[in-house]
Length: 61
Image (cartoon, rainbow, N blue to C red; front, side, top):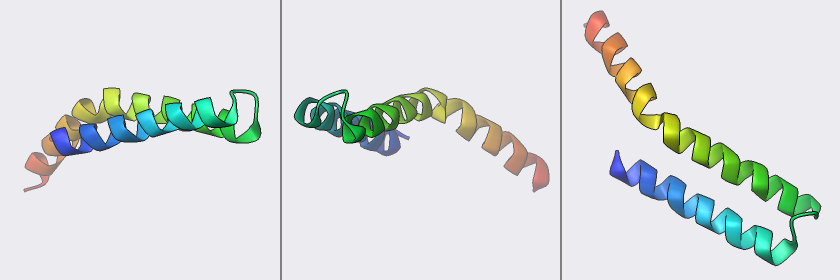
């Protein structure tokens, strides 16, 4: 799991840098802001999602 979380953190950091470079009010800045928020959401939800998948997978076997 740590590799996925690390990747999401790197993507979030890249989005933050992109926002600084393009400006928050630019089209690119707004899209990067959304990307950063999505990655943060996904990072928070990743453990719960994996646990749910494992429960389903174990039930199906």
